[in-house]
Amino acid sequence: MNRPRILLVEDEPHIARGLVFNLEEEGYAVTHVVTGEEALQQIKKQLPTLAVLDLMLPGISGLEVCRQLRRADPRLPILILTARSGEKDRVKGLAEGADDYLVKPFSLEEFLLRVRGMLRRSEWYRPPADARQSFGGNQVDLAEGRALTPRGEILLTERETRMLQAFFQREGKVVSRAELLQEVWGMAPDTETRTLDNFIVRLRRYFEADPARPAHFLTVRGRGYKFVKDVTIDG
Ligand code: CA
Image 1 (cartoon, helix red, strand yellow):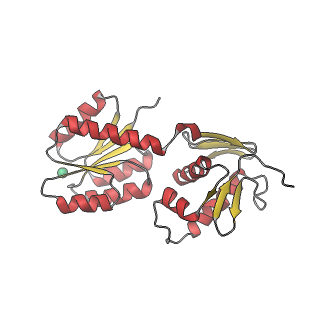
Image 2 (tube, helix red, strand yellow; image 1 turned 135 degrees about the vertical axis):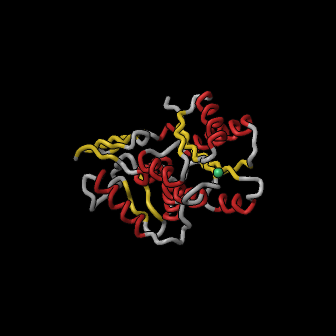
Image 3 (spheres, protein in one colour; image 1 turned 45 degrees about the vertical axis):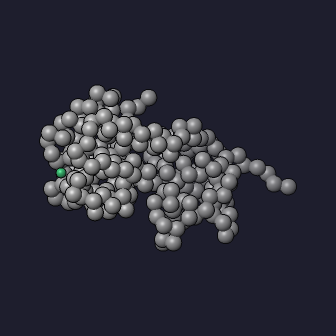
């Protein structure tokens, strides 16, 4: 099993040292960065399993980092750390997509409990049973982010992976456009949806024998889309 990867964004050295030490003791793989800029660089290389984010940072603010982390990964658990006087920041942080917060000073025990709890919840989001799927000559491994198709190997983007997961979890059922936008992009359903259409086109190009006549990623007129694993002959 892979160790959970924790991204810690904290500029105060003594706090960071304590957190890194204890997280590593717990068996997590920790990447510690000091600024928001470094954090954003880091997530381009690899998305963490969970992010711990101090809101008072030099350079770009923790709130902005939070917003961008959330944009990069709608399901990434984000724990924000705030000063006692930072009530407003805390509220804004939660509005920007943070999942939970701790007010400094906090006990290490409480911190570790919070992290453990959030990781447990995040596992609900990503049931491993759905990670691999085979259909129509394609083999998709969501955990690895790659797919083998009759046309060759495809490295899936984060969004493509999320979209496939949304479909695989509801195999044979209609997934509404609103659900896809919410789960894949973290957007309100009334947002511009052309992006979604483009992703559907892309999935069909990857996985359908004839993208113009899809057999697996179906349009359900007026309702959304449906993923069907096995091609059934009607009538
Ligand atoms: Ca700080």
